[in-house]
Length: 125
Image (cartoon, rainbow, N blue to C red; front, side, top):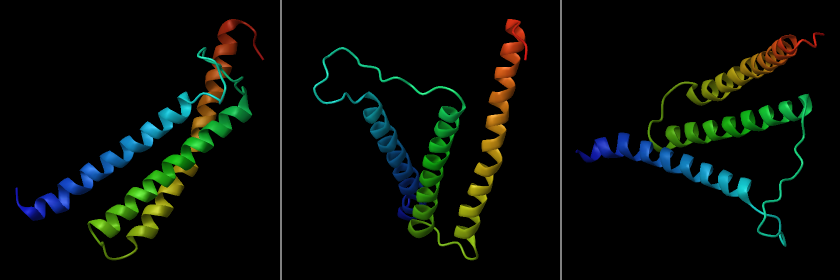
C-alpha cells in the first residue's frame, strides 16, 4: 500500500473505529458500575417509567449520538480532507435537522405501539 492511501483511508477508518469502541466500552463500564459499599449481589436501582423516562432516554441518546457525529466530522475535516465551502456548517445543521425530524417520529411510533397494545388487550381507550 502506498503511504498516501494509508494516510487518507486507513488511518481515519481505524481511528474512528477505535474512538467508537472506546466510547462503547466506557458506556458499558458506566452501566455496570456498582455503588461504593455495595455487596456482590447486583443492586438494581428503580427505573423511571412512562413518557418522561422515554423522552429523557431519547434525548440523551440523540444528544450523545449527535456529539459523537460532530466529533467524527471535525476529526475528518481537520485530519483528512479540508473540504472547501460550508462543509462543517452543513454537517452540523443537517445532522441537527435529522434529529429534529427523527425524535417526533420515534415518539409517535411509541405512542402508536402502546395504543395498539392496549387495543389488543381489550382495555380500549
